[in-house]
Amino acid sequence: MIVNPEIEKYLESLHRFNDPVLEKMERLAQKLNFPIVGRQVGMFLYILTKQKKPSLVVELGSGFGYSGYWFAKGLDRGLVALIDYKEENINKAKDFFKEAGIQNRALFFTGDAVEVARQFQDIDILFLDLEKSRYLEAVEKLKNNLSEDALIIADNVLWHGKVVDENPDKKTKAIKEFNEYMFRNFNSVILPIRDGVLLAMKKSI
Image (cartoon, rainbow, N blue to C red; front, top):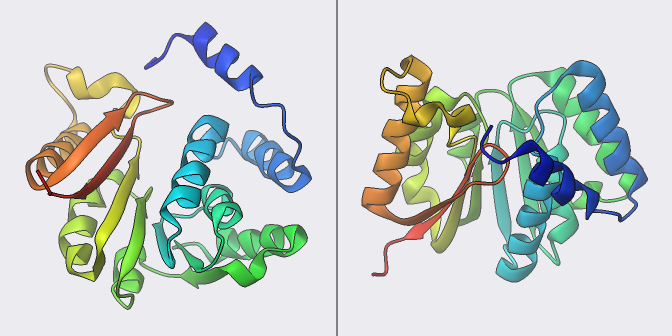
């Protein structure tokens, strides 16, 4: 565990706001054992979005829209592009966004997330939650598609704590390589919430 389970429970207990659609998405995730960022990371994404006021958020690996939902709720203007390789997931996301009345804040795509994202320019927030072995590829292919003061956010960068293993497996090695690349080439920080969230921007120092 990255954070003591009792601390995790305490942090979760602090979130007492009601959002019927969000709660429905969380119940579905629990039923399907589907990984979602959870409310701690979700609120982090929401606050960043509120402060950043992006025109375009592009999300790679959207699942059925849980993290995209937090981005969309934080938008004062602009759009979030949700991309997932499974049409079933994207169709669920469309339904959730429509139920919440925020479908006009989103674009929905099915396909290879990195390749679909290459059509966009001036991306203000790039969110990575696709196959972990593709994180580095995604940044390398999309760095020229970012706006000048863009943020890059990546989930699962501590990978259940495996990043400190002496003999990491192939997937863990890919995540470590990504983390090291981001710290060399961007102003980066990793927040040890949930499974580790990386936040980065182009170097200014």
